[in-house]
Length: 317
Image (cartoon, rainbow, N blue to C red):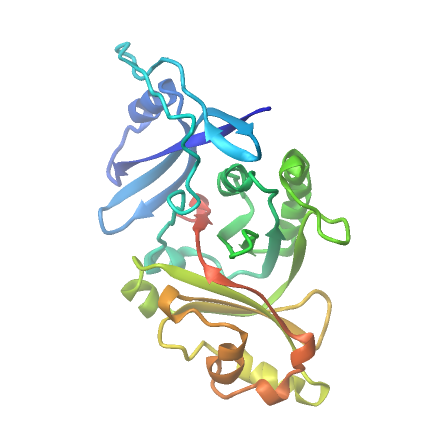
């Protein structure tokens, strides 16, 4: 069975470029498709992210790159023959990619009104292809989408949206996209292709100082579902709806869990070396410990691992 994966490339254009058409036509003539655009205030350039297909075959449950045929690389007719050893599997570690978002960019984002969290389980041998499909999707109604995977090779995506309408649109588009990657996924015990939940945002707390100081470092994000004891709901909300006190937290978000009144979603982005788990959050992630104020057996850690990729919506720039 033959499938398609993608090559990737990024280019830069200065902010003051008045005619971008020659560059766009040149890249398009080489087969590159524009995926997204992000500003880089430090270099005063726009970064353009491109993709184009390359051949992939699936053999014995593993992904192998096929030898590529000769192709025209530019309008001068220069031919480049690109061959990849068929016995070299795509590396799980080397394939990692990461985007940086500056504090300047976060300041341009509207405050999210809805958050949606989705988990996927790719089949054995389909990790890299699913990763490519997931990371190169377009999300026109999403502010930003943070993505990573855990040690079980399950992907988790956290999507921040500016309205309920945007969330509903994403659900509709997401169903069609899931149909297109159905053959790559393992279904969960309930028969669903995903584990997911969403809710309206109660509080959004970006730390612009840390976003500026630690922009270039490796990051990790945590997703928790926290059930409050009935007699302490308001007290826990008062504690949770404050900026994180962790020294290297980049942002935190608190949202309602589904349609419940006593359970909330916590999302925290921290530097990788300061990644927090559920116990850290309960004991020292807030202005005071909440361990005794919640129901531990009905609270759980949905994800806590490195951020692998982040997609941002260029319309805000």
